[in-house]
Image 1 (cartoon, rainbow, N blue to C red):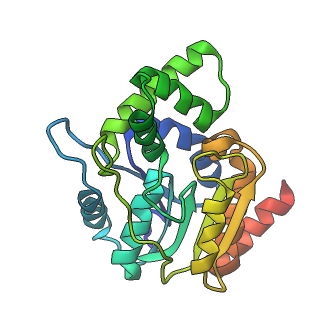
Image 2: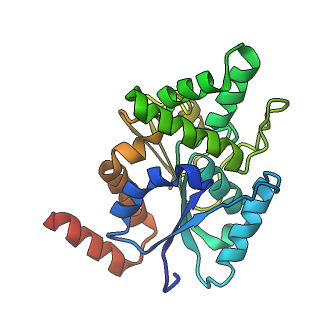
Amino acid sequence: MSDIFDVVWLTSSPALARFDQPLLKYLSKYMKIAQWEYHQDKDEGSSLDEAVDLLNEFLTPCTDSIHLIGHSSGGVIALEFARRYPEKVRSLTLLSVSSQPAHTWHTHYYVQRDLFTISREQILANSVRNLFGKQPYDITKKLMTALDKDLDQTPLSHSLFKLVDLPKGGVSMPMMVCGSKNDSIVDSPALHNWLKYFKPEDHLWEYPKGHHFFHYFYPQPVGEQILSFWQLHHLQPMMVSQLMSQNLSN
C-alpha cells in the first residue's frame, strides 16, 4: 500500500463533512487515512464523472491499491470509481448507500418538492428529522442550513425537473455495505437488495439505530465492524496482528 495512507475516505460536499469526523477519528487510531473532498465552484455544473476523474487524478501517484470508503453520496463516488478503476481499489466500504446508488436523500427532497405544495424550508426541516431524528429547534436550523448547501455541492444530477438513476450491481473487489435499521432514506429493503450482487467475500451489516448518519452517532461500533472486515480479508499480516493486540488490550 501507499506509505502515506492505507484508506481514502470520500466526502461528496464540505457541508456535511463534519459528520464523518467521529468515525474517521476512531479509524485513524488503527489505519492511515486520507480524507478526499469534492469541491464544486458556484459556476461549475454538478458532475459525478468529474468527481471520479478528480479522484483518479489524486490517486495517480499511488503505486498500490487502497481501501475506499464513503457515506451516502461519498459512497456513490467511491462505487463509481471502483467500477471504473478496479485495479486501484483493494476493498470498497459503503455506508448508507442504496442498492440503487442514485437514491440518496437528495432524491427524497426533490420528490417531496414535486408532490407537495410546501416550501423548501419545510422540506428541509422534514429532511433533518429523516436523516438525524428529532432534534432541538436550534440544531434543526443549523442542520437545515447544512443540507441546503449540500444540495448545491453534491455532484449528483438530480433536479426539480429530472431524477437520475445509476447502474445497479456490485464490484470486483471485496465490498462491505453498512446501514441503520431506522434509516428512512436507505431502509432495510434497499440495503438488503445489495445481497443480489454479493460475492462470497462481501459483507452486509446494520446497526439498530442512528438513522442515516448512524456512523456519526455511533462511531465505535461502526468502526469496529469496518476494521473487522478489513482484518478478515485485506490487511497485511503485520497490521492484522497489531489491530488484534490493540483490541485485546482495550
